[in-house]
Length: 574
Ligand code: FES
Image (cartoon, rainbow, N blue to C red; front, side, top):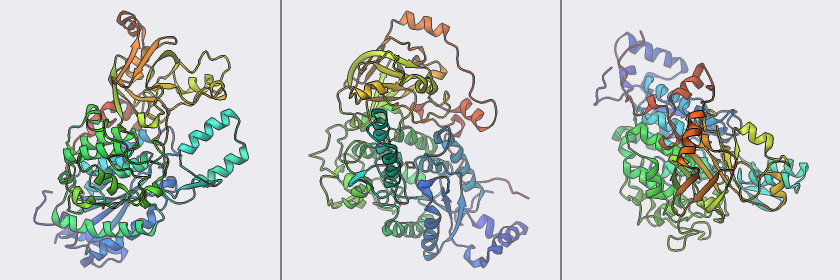
């Protein structure tokens, strides 16, 4: 049906006087809604990623009811619908494999139904980019309600961060300095309220990113999930989406090139996750904004680190909120960002964050006294990563950022697990650990295994960090001198596939280089002998995925999903 721009989109379903109008209305009335509730009012779809299988989003069923209150109050009519939910801590082999599947679910659910505006309820890592990618391909007025972080973990008198504590305890287990009882106790002390990881991991980074893009109400991302002010924010988002529909404030009016540049700068200044690069590139691809891996380096790598948050710093998201939250950091960046970028509340990001008060300068530093002068993610190039690789210097102690070492190669993650703690493994702290087969096609799905743990024998010697290189990702809560997202990946014949034990590899972050010191002729010989691994699947979604997924530098979307198909549906069901 062709949309009449003077009418609500939902009127194409509910406003008709023919047989189909009867059908569309009649079945909805079985829920007890009188027809004046949904005729002529903005119909708001609440896209819910709630699931018991996604602990980070388990509170979102309640949040949907609060959003509905706000929608009703503003004169709209809310209809909640589920999409597949991605629980980072539970799903195998990795949620990243299914991000694009959820995006398809969200896109088709939105387009196929009588919706005028959308509220995305998100939380755990992939639930934000996946639903937003889908929404972008339809381009209705859309607002995001981030589910919020957990309260600070508290263990034995100290604050502990989700994820970051896990990596610390994993090393302590290898050192033999933590008991089983202590581990069990730490489990419940770390995750003690509803919400997502409360470090500046991927969930908090993505929530901050969508706030910086202008897609949440100001200050929404840092509010803890269990704080009553989060519920107020959800209610207000319900109010606001109704107005956005009336104003025709669609996603493409907010998601401009300037908005993406703002998000890159903000993610750098808060020490955000490397995963944001992949997700932001994919989101930009859906809304038609050209964004590439070099943009992140050019725009973000020189940003100062302002947020003193784990894993790059000391504090946690609860502290960040009490210190003033993201508007403070954005206000500090006002000399860099595009202040006139419009946001969901109809005001510019500059207006929203102007003079945002900071209540703790140790948590959010002023721009003239940052935690680190240059905090952004650095894009590396070289013969080992023709299309790029990334490293997050702010999550390292800086000692290995210029380093040449002997490669110790693991052909797969299983190979790594089998040999890493063997006393016979020929490795010392100067070596460079190389992991193959964990890219988008190879694993498949590009899991967060790039921050592979160090060999037990070296940990016991007191070694804390080594250079690690892979075509995988790492959790946003992780740290160390870890080179990620090597592109092209090993499974499609990238140079990483050709690395052998004993090769010299040079990491030169200052000059943004990653070099495999093997003569070109030798690499050409190795390439001739190389054969691709057997495909990871021959049927189903995974088959579709491995045949269409793009490489990390392009955002790992399925090639055919790029762009959008708009909001129109041309055929009737009956
Ligand atoms: Fe869900 Fe970290 S596991 S946000």
